[in-house]
Every structure is written in C-alpha cells, then in structure tokens.
Length: 66
Image (cartoon, rainbow, N blue to C red; front, side, top):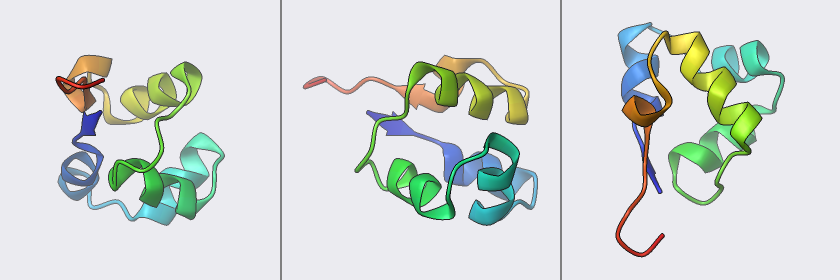
C-alpha cells in the first residue's frame, strides 16, 4: 500500500511527532506507515485522513500486489 502522508505533513508543516500526537500513536508508528512497513487499521487511517481534511483514497492507495 502506498501513501502520501509525508507529502500531506509537509503541506501542513507538521512533523511525524505532531501527527502521532493528533492520532494517539507513536512517532515510530507514523514512520513505519510512511515507509510502507506497516498498514494502519481502518480507524487509524480514517483519523489520519481527517487530520489532513482529505478523503481516505487521497492518502492511501492499494498497489497491484495488495
């Protein structure tokens, strides 16, 4: 699964720690999601999309092998 979290954070001048605090996870969790090493739960993905004010599919995209 690909994601644009890093891009969305940059648009809002937000650090990984800032985002982590807003969605109640660790900075390491945000780092792992951005790196594609961890697929977030539906609830966490929805929280992240809400923070950025965009639809879920604008941040997360399934890849061919998913």
